[in-house]
Image (cartoon, rainbow, N blue to C red; front, side, top):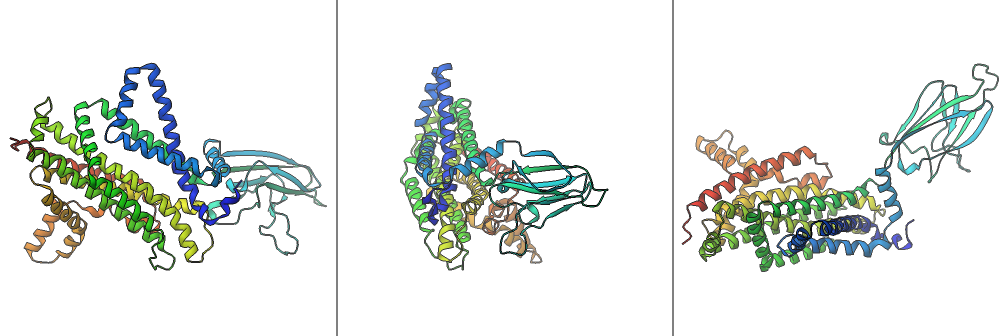
Length: 503
């Protein structure tokens, strides 16, 4: 049941935010249970897991999960928990069923209740061995026509309704009731009882409720993967943890996070003058802002963690321990990836929340009908593929920045990386403009296309803004491309660092 407070239009935007927070809370509870079990089985490993909370990545992630959980608990009285819980339960329950009913001869408008909620109905079909008439909606007094006409079933002929066909739901309200007539009249051929077969398929009323388990599963996989990383390549993990901790301690990290949160929140009330399309502009601007801030933090960290350590002879001290140069470079790169992931988790969560709020604000400013909370959730979900691709682009450029930082300082690193960022997005245009030109122009165009990363593969703001679904296969190929180019850049970094004189 929706609380009276939920009638306020601003509260319409809260359920999607609540779902993300409850996903974080669920993951937190499961992780605490696993830690308690680990404490009973292996106390030493449990103590090490607890100590990992003080490292550069898991600690901030834990605080982020706790903050999201606190927000979810605070918003619980303001969201339709019952309907969301019903949708979550439907995801686990059997969704296909059937019943066989016997309709006696001479029956007129016999009422039969079906165990089906109309809001969850995806498909329903009727089939009878004799001609019968089925009414799914009672006539409304004062109206000459029914919303859905009576169904005149012929013998052994199936009648089917499917939600995706765009036709009106055959039932009204929260109850599925049919009125069946088996009145043979003077027709001897139709005399006798009729066997009516009813089958249906149910789906969650709000499929957007899947945000909760997906959020919980993603956080669990992330934490468990990082835990395994800390346990297996310990030396590399130590370098990565040190790099992440150093990045978080830099003022640029705090400035980027605070500036990003303030700007993303201000996007809610900024008028874009797009005649009702402000939500699309917010998603476009937000994705670009998060990506640029993450790149700034990563490039700054690469310069501080590698170039400054080489110049300050800190790297020589680190490498005097049982640590190879290869482990040093790989650990630094993984640390940069973890820093980028932290920025995207924090600012990405804020961007998703502001998108949900912007849907309501845009409807109010444009004098539109108040949206449903599922509309806010649908807009919020479209942000996720854009965040994933922007993260992949940042990871790719982090490898480039690492390679540059093995030889050059911070300012050249910033200039080179942002030049590559600009040219990488212009590669398709450069290649296209060189077609039919002089040989030297074609050569330069092909050279750029060969050496520079094609960053347009990671730019899908137009699809995100337009609400076009991004296939998983595209994300997979983009991840493979980013991984291959990043691997090449890390190999270049290894070659450049291998011959670098640290003394």
